Length: 203
Image (cartoon, helix red, strand yellow):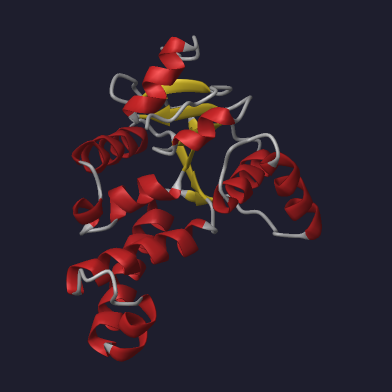
């Protein structure tokens, strides 16, 4: 069933956009995953592993400022571990706990992959972080009532707010529901929804 996005953000199609040297982007975890992880193609669509790395590389060449959120480490490590587990044993009954605790060689491989990926993140971007305090949690919970996001995204948006950043590179269509930001994406469904609702921005 197609996702019915109510688009509040402005949306930029990264397939036709050129990053500028005065751009400041927060890069979402999914884009870092495709940019940094050697086996990202295992669990991704072809456009994801080509268009996001290409756009991030163009942004670096244009001297745009790229930001990451420290919260992305948890998400990135989880995705990498899940993909490595799937490569090692695709049986859905094979548990993450089993993989993590009973196969030390595999665990070492996962750690090396996460360290390599995170090293690329921190060498490509500057950290913008958020203290997950009671105030931040309450603000995220308030946002949760009106913007259709998951828990990680709520906290990443709080980090964006604190840093005064309004542009995010992401494939996650949930960000379309957030007013006052620009979503840089190649997600076809998101772009189609933005086009039909008059929210596609051509720079």
